[in-house]
Amino acid sequence: MEIIGLIEAFESTKDRINITYEQFKEDTKDFEITPVYYKNEVIGAMLVKENHVHACIKPQYKGKWFGRVALRVISKIIEEYGEAITSATTEDGRKIVESLGFIKDGDVYRSTKKWALKQY
Figure 1 (cartoon, one colour):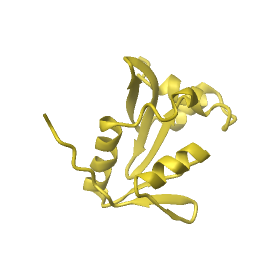
Figure 2 (cartoon, rainbow, N blue to C red):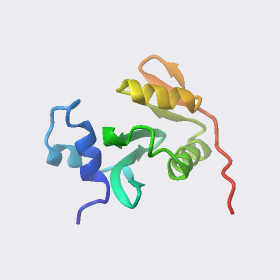
Figure 3 (cartoon, rainbow, N blue to C red):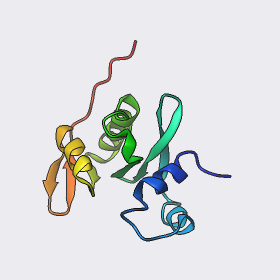
């Protein structure tokens, strides 16, 4: 059974990493995968292992995908571990994590900022 969002996450990274989909699938088998949607289309996924989070989103959706689901994922990590850690590998990724209050610490970005989402 295929994990929803994993193929799209792989497709978003294949120009930066030199592995097959099967290797990507193996490398992420211990991650919690949260599919990311835009207008009912799967456009990638957030991959979480402990307090490390990686957003692997198809580049054509830059600026269109980040919302409540992503904030919930990050807030859940911080609630459980006290901080979320990510590595932004693209300029767009760095802009997003910095706008969310992540602070660069060596090769990673760290955040302890939880997001309060209003429920209606």
